[in-house]
Amino acid sequence: MTVFVSREVRLTSRPVGAPVPQNFHVVDTEVPEPTAGRIVVRNTWMSVDPYMRGRMDDGASYIEPFRIGEALEGHAIGVVVASASADIPVGATVVHFAGWREYAVLDAAEATVVDTSRPRPQDHLDALGQTGFTAYLAVTEIARIRTGDVVFVSGAAGAVGSVAGQLARRFGAARVIGSAGGPVKARVLTEEFGFDAAIDYRAGSVAEQLAVAAPDGIDVYIDNVGGDHLEAAIGALRMHGRAALIGMISGYNAAAPAPGPTNLYDIVTKHLTLRGLLVTEYADRAPAYAAAAARWLADGSLRTRQTVVDGIDNAPRAFLGMLSGANTGKMLVRL
Ligand code: NAP
Image (cartoon, rainbow, N blue to C red; front, top):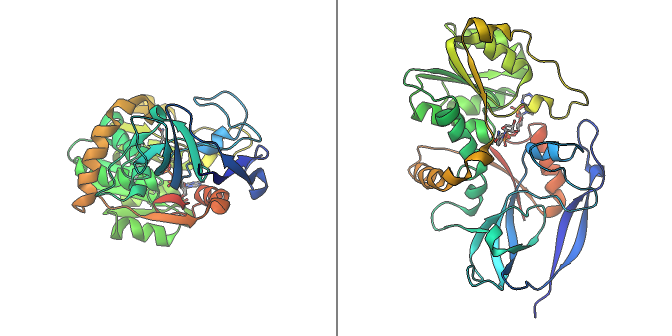
């Protein structure tokens, strides 16, 4: 009988404002043999995502808070090293939700076997996974990009934003503008991800820079950031413009609710549609999206970047870095 020793990241305390390393600790655990129907997975990659910040707060939301003293969770991919399930053999690569640990013990029903012959395993946590699918839904289902649209994407150098900009183009946008923090990321938008124009939001007013990049306004806004970006986009949207509200990361560390945009009356006068999205509502469509995205990655028409941090001990650092912009593309931890 093989006994695996795992390490996992637990929440020590709830962050107040921006999280700090002391909110987390890494603990050794012994992995039990799988009981009937269960598998043991050696995780090879895990995802750190902005929504996890919300789960560190106590209080009702669309997903339960993390518990103090318990392992965090989130998407991960790994290889099955022990199995008491007829459905998933040892050696299979599976995606599941028991990240933040080196070994996961799961019901086989909680794991999805994935093909790793063409996309790299970690792509299942990136363009083929929840972040890519979110971008796809924002563009096709929520904002419903049409041929000729002028599109503005915030958080455009991140995992969702970089895919959203490229998919906006694929589905008909005539001009795609992205915003990101800093001149290096702004260059990546135009040089690698095919954006027509890039705004460095740290260099000055988003509204003023957007007015230069889109002098006749925009038709669609894909919002990853909220705050000043949302206000600028509402101001720039043309009559009957549409916005897909995906996330508002500028407020995730705020200790008190951030004030809303001052120009909401524009929604009335310009007949705008602002519509929210939670990717989990569309889970049944994720496999079809992943198959299409695998083809786009393979033929080079969808490009991604990944920022990789090594080791479970550094997972909290990866998470904190992602919140403050240390990533270009998807932030991942290699375990
Ligand atoms: P990401 O963009 O890869 O990483 C987060 C990025 O946010 C950082 O790299 C940083 O980039 C930017 N950021 C942090 N603070 C900011 C601020 N104050 N103003 C502007 N930008 C800031 O993360 P992601 O996984 O792709 O997620 C992007 C957004 O989508 C988040 O809001 C997330 O909650 C949301 N999301 C929603 C769903 C859904 O179902 N609704 C699903 C997945 C993700 P810079 O260096 O450019 O500042």
